[in-house]
Image 1 (tube, helix red, strand yellow):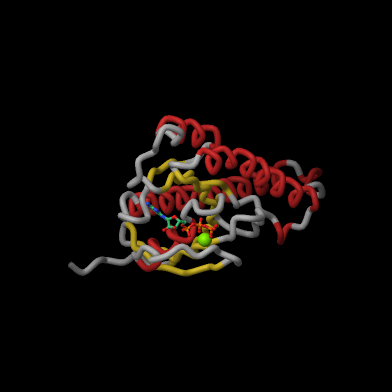
Image 2: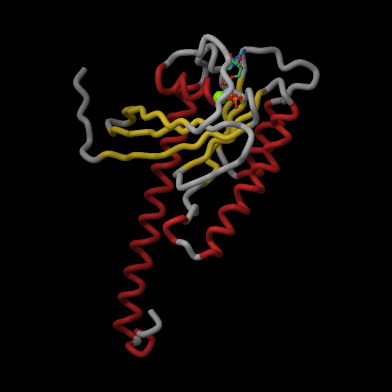
Length: 211
Ligand SMILES: Nc1nc2c(ncn2[C@@H]2O[C@H](COP(=O)(O)OP(=O)(O)OP(=O)(O)O)[C@@H](O)[C@H]2O)c(=O)[nH]1
Ligand SMILES: [Mg+2]
């Protein structure tokens, strides 16, 4: 069937963050190549890979950035996915600290006034629980715990398996929808503020200088 592709391209950068061995590389490989890496290799540097997907007849370019686990570094990005391994409580518990650090980094950039370094858009968009194909074990993370943390972070939540591919497409689809919605809301807020400024300027010429 020939699809009626909408004009215009939307491109989003998505950063993957989480402890070592939570599947950041496997997640990126599954999204970009639809494959599961045959063996584990410790990531030593950031690696961004681009992929293209079509949703609702609209083309989306996605830059998926895999990161090493040791240091938390965030830079201009549209979204952050926080990941944990469903069998590893430490990888889950560490995420609260990471989330706090993300907020701190964003705040310090904001205070510095360096607009080009602004990380305001770097939202935690999704919490991803990996290795759904494995038995959680006694100390594993329940779905309820995952959902509660996602509520705390005010973000989406999905349980996936990079090995079997389960829920990968669904997760990506929901993330794209969320990013698109956020983009539209931001554009709406900007337009509203521009209109408001024009009205205020016309009505009260005296405060023109302040605006
Ligand atoms: N059972 C199972 N194992 C997985 C799955 N995804 C990844 N693994 C395994 O988990 C290990 C870690 O996967 P990676 O994707 O390399 O983890 P990472 O987060 O990139 O790790 P670092 O590069 O060290 O930060 C590898 O041995 C993978 O084979 C999955 O969905 N199910
Ligand atoms: Mg890796």
